[in-house]
Every structure is written in C-alpha cells, then in structure tokens.
Amino acid sequence: MAVNVIIMAAGKGTRMKSALPKVLHRVGGRSLLQHVLDAAAGLGDKHTVVIVGHGAEAVAAAVGPAATCVLQQPQLGTGHAVLQAVPALVDAHATTLILNGDVPLTRTATMAALLQACAGERLALLTVDLADATGYGRILRNGDAVQGIVEHKDATPEQRHIHEVYTGLMAAPTAALKRWVQALKNDNAQREYYLTDIVALAVAEGVPVVACAAPDETEVLGVNSPLQLADLERRFQRRQAEALMDAGVRLADPARFDQRGTLQCGSDVEIDIGCIFEGAVQIGEGAHIGAHCVLRDAVIAAGAVVHPFTHIDGAQVGAGALIGPFARLRPGAVLGAEVHIGNFVEVKNSTLADGAKANHLAYLGDTTVGERVNFGAGSITANYDGANKHRTVIEADVHVGSNCVLIAPLTIGAGATIGGGSTITKDVAPGQLAVGRGKQAAISGWSRPKKAPKA
Ligand code: UD1
Ligand code: MG
Image (tube, rainbow, N blue to C red; front, side, top):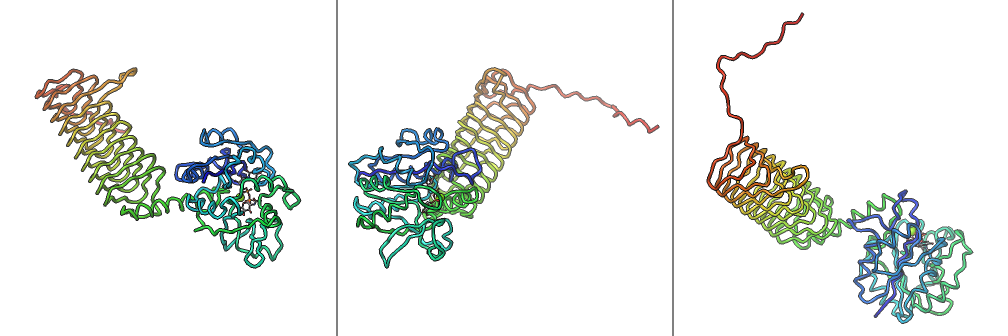
C-alpha cells in the first residue's frame, strides 16, 4: 500500500529558547526529525512531505532528498500547515499519514497500525490516556463513537476532565483530507486553523472515525523544552539498553548508558557505567568496556579489555588486547591481538602488530610497529617536522627504552634495542643497540652550592 506521509515541522519551539529549529535538536545523536523520517522509512513505498517554516532552510537541508519540503509561512495552525502540504500529495495514494516532527519515538509498527485502521476510508486517530492531559486536545465521544476533538484552550471545565487525548498523529483518506482542510475555519480561542476540527467534519459526512490507542506514552511524547528533550533522551537510551540486554549484553546500569549511533555486540560483552558509544561501534564476544569510556566508530575484537576513562575514535582493537586506563586511540590506530596500551598513551594512524606494548606515557603517530615490540615509558615518535608528517617503522621484537624520541622518517630494524633517553635520527640496523644521548660524566668531591645566610 503506497502512502503519503506528512511531517509537521514548521513550529518555532519557543520554549526550547534556542537558535536551532526545534526539530533539529537531537535525541541519541540523531535529530528529532531524523527519528521520524527513519521510523517512516520502515513503512516502505511512500511519498513524504515535510512542512517547514521556522528555520526552513536549515530544516530543509537536514531533510535532504529524502522528502519534499513545503513552506508554511506564516504559521496559522496545524490545519493551515496541512493545507500547504496537500498540493504536494500523490492523489493515487489513498491514505495519508500525518506525523509530528517533534514526536521522535513513535515506532514504525504504530504508524503501520494507524494506516491499517484508516485503510484509505476511515479517519484513524492515535490517542493516549494521560493522567495529566493539560494542553492536549481531548477526544469527545458519544457512547463509544468519536465525535470530535476539543483543544484544551477551547474545552469546558467538564471536557478538561477527559484523559483520552489526541497525540497529534492521524491517518486519513487522502481525497477527504484535502476537502476537509480546505473547509477549516479559525473561530476558536487561538484564532488558528486546527487540524483537529477535521474530526467533526468527518463525523458530519458519515466517515467512520476510529481511535487507536498508542502502545505506550513514550511513543507519543513530544519535545517542547530542554527538560522534555532530556526526558526523551533517557527514555530512548532505556529502549536501546533494554534491546542490548535482551540480546545478552550486560550493562552495569542501563540508566548510565548512552548509545548515539549503532552498537553491535557479541555474546558476553560487559559494559560498565557512564560509557558513550557514537557512530558505528562493534564489540566482540567477551570484551569488557570499563567505566566512563567514549568509543566512536570503533571495532573492539573478542576478549579485549578497555579499562576506564579511555577514548577510542576511528580505531580497531585486536583480540585480547588491553587498553587503558586513560588511553587515547585516534583515527587510524589499528591494534593487533594481545596489544597492550597503557595509561596516558596516544596512538594515531599507526598499526601495532600482535603482542606489541606501549604501557606508559607514550605517543605513536604515523608508525608501523612490529610484533612483540616494547615501546618504553615516556617515549614518542616525532612524526611532524613543522611542515610535513613522516612515518616511523619499528620492526618486530625491537625494545625501545624509556624517554626516547624517534625522529621520523626512521626505520628501526628487527630485534634492535634503543637505549633509554636516546634521540634517534638515523636508521638502526637489525639487532643493533643504538644510544643517542649525552655521555654521563662523574665529578668526584663536588659540593653543592649552599644558601646564603639571611642578612
Ligand atoms: C496539537 C493538537 C492537539 C494534540 C497535540 C499533541 C491541533 C490543533 N492540536 O496541539 O490536539 O493533543 O498536538 O501534541 O492540532 N505546526 C506547524 N505549523 C503550525 C502549527 C504547528 O507546522 O502552524 C507543527 C508544530 O511544529 C508541531 C505540530 O505542528 O510539530 C503540532 O503543533 P503544536 O503547536 O505543538 O500543537 P499543539 O498545540 O501541541
Ligand atoms: Mg505540541
């Protein structure tokens, strides 16, 4: 069944008190509008129209080629918004689904159920029972039959006691929707064209109106303020955390977990508190992620342990590797199996072969490190000459002492040893010991200067 989808996104979002258009604020790293577009994408064959107004250029740019944008200027209400969209609807698509750009967590299945209830001939409303219905449009019924929606501001004190509210999502027969929005008037408390008034028009025409109950409150909550944005963020993270835990991932605390992209986990993965996962992250079987790590676009192989406070961005960690605490892996860091990267070690655009170690206070940039290399505490590769970057090659089984500076371009041959405190500027042949530092002098009988007596 091909459908039209209208997404309302012209509103200002005054209560966000932000220069950013409301629908471009983010939940789980994706804009509110993107959540709606993504959930609607799951419906399959459809034609999508986004109504833009406030921040129209930025919103249209965010939508991209995925949908047609129509401008609503000025914003005279939800009915007026849909009126702007109807010329862009595909007539042949019998059903039109209306969504809100600031209601991000509606599931595809709920949208599909609404379309099913409409079936191209009924007006289907998504409703929910709220303990506090303040501000929402109330569903008016005569017996069981839905008669209309009354907006909070227009409701009588009795009507305000109704807890069944309209969520802002509906599905309507396309041809009838066009007719109804053209007939709307703005004789109400807000002098707006209310989309909700089409319910009474449908009833008057004898078109059946059905109310579908939302599966849960989270699916229909909208964002109007930073507080509500943060609340939806936690609900969204809880949803993701539950999906991971259902798949067997052990989260130390689902309330202290943030996934802002995709996270694929093998079996027996453990994730401690306060971690943030961004972009596309994969974690292999049995890997452990310590507290307060930030992982972005990373692949962590099976059995690896990432100790607390580690930052990994655009990097790969091999099987059984030990990383951190307080390590930083930058883009292009590719670590083999059983590699050890310890505290305050930074690795950028470098490969470390199986079993290589840099355990303390080191920098490896633009470097190829062979198997079982030990890179000493405080040692660095000097990869930048002030204008260009150069590579360092450290072959297998090299031992680099502490506090060395390896000035690239440079090759250290297999099995070579670099004496602690050396500055190395020339290639070292395999098996050699290279020492490049001032010779130690011994001066006997030397007495230290003494403090002058106070005057
Ligand atoms: C609307 C419903 C109300 C429902 C509530 C659910 C109407 C008249 N009322 O009220 O019954 O309970 O949503 O959240 O529809 N928008 C435009 N152009 C406009 C006005 C609004 O694009 O001229 C967009 C907004 O950006 C928003 C959506 O339409 O995404 C809803 O508008 P909003 O002002 O939030 O409507 P409510 O007063 O909340
Ligand atoms: Mg609203």
